[in-house]
Every structure is written in C-alpha cells, then in structure tokens.
Figure 1 (cartoon, rainbow, N blue to C red):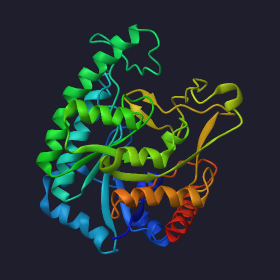
Figure 2 (figure 1 turned 135 degrees about the vertical axis):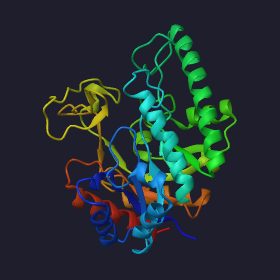
Figure 3 (figure 1 turned 120 degrees about the horizontal axis):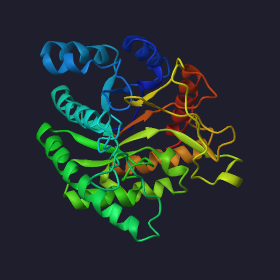
Amino acid sequence: MALKLGAYTACLHDRPLEEALEVLQGNDLSSVEVNTGGFIPSPHCHVDLLLSSEKARRDYLDVFSARGMELTGLNCNGNPLNPLPGVGPKHADDLRRSIELAGLLGVKNVVTMSGTPGSDPDAKYPSWVVNPWDGVYMDVLDYQWDVATEFWRDIDARARAAGVRVAIEMHPHNLVFSPVTLKKLVDLTGATNVGAEMDPSHLMWQGMDVPASIRYLGPLVFHAAAKDAMITPGVDIRGVLDTSFERVPANAADKVPTGYGFWVTTWPSNPGWKFVAVGIGHDVAWWTDFLTALADVDPDMAVNIEHEDAAFSRIDGLALAAENLHAAMSKM
C-alpha cells in the first residue's frame, strides 16, 4: 500500500468536474475530494440527485474510475453549531446529508469542522474563546462543550450507521482547533467514527509541531490535506492572532459566502502569516517527514492538496504543490 496523493477540487470550481479531473491527472494525482456543502457551493457533487438515484451514483463514480481515480473524501466544512439561523442549521443538515451520501457512495471519509456555538443559550453569534484566563470564559467553554458533545454524539452515531468516518479539520475559530481539543471531543462523546483531518497549515501558524501532533493522535488521524503556511514579517507587530481584516464589498464579483449575508473577509496587506503553496513555507524534507508520519498511522491514507495561495493561479499553484508533494513522497 502507499499514500494516495490527490487534491480537493474546490480550487477548480470554475470548471466542470471532468475538466477538474483532467487537471489532477496532468499532475499525476489520483485521489479526489469534492465539496458537498457547508461554507461553499458544491459544483462537483450534485448532492440531491445522488441521494435520490442509485443510477446517478453509479454514473458519478464511473467518472472517477474511468480515469483511474478514486473519490476519497466528501468535504463539508462549515460551522454546524453556529447560532445564526442562516448558518448553523444549514451546515448541520449539509453534514448529515454528506454522511448519508458518503455511505451510499462507499466513500470512507467526510471532512468537516467541529463548529463553534454562541457563548450561552441566548447568544446570537458564535464566540471563539482563545484564552480563558478570566474565569468567566470557563463558563462559556463549559456551555459550548455541552452543546458540541450532544451534537457530535449524534453525528458519530450517524457515521457509524453509514459505515463512514468523519474527519474534523482542526481549524481556529472552532471549538476543536488542536490535537488536544480533538482528543477532548472524542473522549467526551465516546466517538468511534470521529477523528481528525490532518491539515497542517492551521497547526503551523499556531506554532505546533505537526509530526508530533500526528503521533499524538495516532489512529485518530483519518485523512489529510496538503496545505502549507508560513510566518511572515507582519508577525513582528501582529503576532499570529490578528483582527485587522476588512469587509468585502457586497457587490464584489468573487466574494465567498460563509452564510446568508456573510462573506469571507480580506487579509491585511502585511499579515503575520499566510497560506502558501506546498513547498513554499516548508521545504521538501519537511513534507517527507509529514508524509512519513501519516504513513506510520495508515499507509493507505489519502493526502489531498488544498490550494489557497493567492500568489499563484489555480493551475500553477496546484502544479507546484503536486511537484513538491511527489518529490517528498519519493524520499520516503
């Protein structure tokens, strides 16, 4: 067995699935992850149709197998615990439907985020507690973990019944944003089918040792993303926690939705850190260590490139990431 190298097709949302797969093939990638809801649309997976038709599911899987490719993950990143009525309930429903669809398709992993509730039962907005040095925030965390435990017990049961694993991306702004909080969720829920999607980029800018994090979680690492990040000069005055972002104009052509009436914001001009193409923030030797640590957990694990480096076009950034990932794989 060998690690399966591929890509998450969200960066190729501007073209049909078949054309997106041609791009992956051209970079010698065979693993594919598609979006099925949450923060962004799902142009490469028509969830309603696939849930309703066995023939549609067969035809859909044939699109991959005919090209020697494998659909290794459904991605439904969002905030299923958000108290905003236009966000949380939709994202939670998208996740449930993604689990059901993964089971019907025979796809092993559904990728998502843990979500973040509000601070209390009457809260209107989600609240992310960064450092509970003031005891009042312990009360907030107690409430949030109670909400998360109830929700994730149900999700784990659904995943178990469907024969699917749910891999949580440890992402800041979420209750689960580190290996320690991932393990806490699993322990609180007694989950058997909830674990981690090892996206190293979010751990990098928080200052974590990624291979050590993989070893800490061990078999709880179900799935992986190849996404790089780097600390940049702005860290001198901003640190790695920074709120100097700006709103995107409502009429902007390329705004990315996060919920009804809400969009991804713009970064400061000199951020403290940023996402970069694989190999830019960390060299090939680092990525070899990363892949080796993953293979020690599961030598058949899927590792899918997630391209979010604005300095490169979608095609060029994906190609550079693939080149460096293959180079790292060759040194294992």
